[in-house]
Length: 117
Image (cartoon, rainbow, N blue to C red):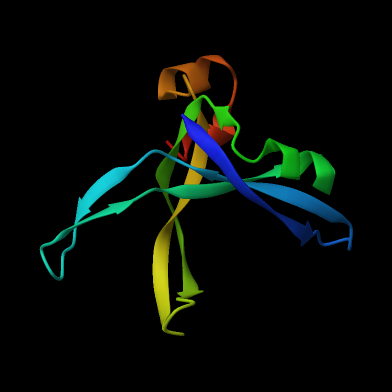
């Protein structure tokens, strides 16, 4: 399950505004590669919506079936907000509906998702 935790306004290439929903996966415990200590985290992703701001606000806290998965992508530069450090990443996090396995994606005619899996 994922939880809608926030929303944000965005503008597309044509200048039209729309809202995204920020999704958060479940609690994960991860061991730091630098300190060796465990810490709690959760993967997050965003999806576009056709909703108004009022509807987006009312959806916060709602849970959806699925998960947030790490997906490899073309390398891109990302600036860490806390430190200002620019780093290169080659992955992103994406929402996956429950049941979106490779076999189901292929059989449902979703070839655009096959590469991401």
